[in-house]
Length: 443
Image 1 (cartoon, one colour):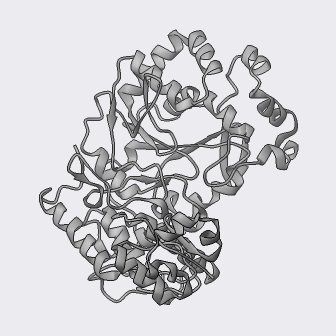
Image 2: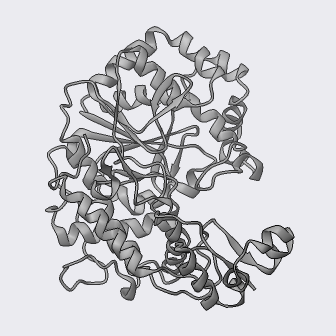
Image 3: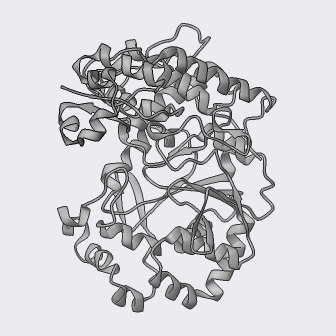
């Protein structure tokens, strides 16, 4: 018998990852949106199984171009879910790839077709691109598609080729919509909360140069993480592209020796005199199933603020978020800003229980099992109390060890939450929001 106990932790995220994954998988098996599993939005009226699609309203609707950067090795797996969810409400978007093709009636533009022949023949990562130009999608095999899962893989040659797309992507996007006020850049596994993006961008003057995203460093270069999503105003696009074209040979050499295209873009922005403005905590680098809901940095509790994106999202997670967001828009009628806590309270909290059978919550911490005990030295075994020595004998014993050590809970064939502690944590996080006076946007 195997029973695992957790380390002491105040973070709810470790408790939730496996539960959410299991629930989402169940939704898929039940045709995604069964009536008995509708999202429970607080204080909502009685609703139909499928509320009519309600898209957000904004004066910016016709002034934003959403740009999706993808590649042939991942596009069939990751992109189609966008057409069935978020992009239903986006008036204008364009998709750039390394292969010109149509996917479900949507055109993918080759964004690398203007890279110089010198680099297309000398840079090793272009072997995939050259193969695609020669043979099309038929030239791909399992090896060249390897690693196109939610988190990607360094072994996927498409990822190595990706670094060349960023600056040409900006150039093509500006040509596509020269008068757009804003350009929003995402990847196929980035979930864009469109209603919040519209509200967020209203806070900025689009006639000034803005480069917005979640900052990361490689060496001394600060840049907006591409997978999490980033936003650039029209003036900033023009400034950085002018700088790039003036120094194109230098940036080609720089790109050839570096590995991250979003870092190359960040370097171009810095050299052009455009500083990155942080969009944290609104832009997120993880899926909501791997999200730490308790983060509080510089007295800015994430719980209280409004999300713009989640990254590394699977198709089931897309559908779950889209169902929730569709209901939120329909019943809230654009009158309330969607916050992180609303997602937790409506999608996750209803699933929490004091006990679940045949479920492993994947937390990391102290493990109590016959196998683990055998590996311990006599001295280490002697350090365990009698209660701990019997922890693996039953679920009740496991719970007793938890109470004795005042620990939270974790990996087990039978798992659960101490709901009083969960509710107490939620109440404390809600109280922290009061000092923000209703402001959903960090500054």
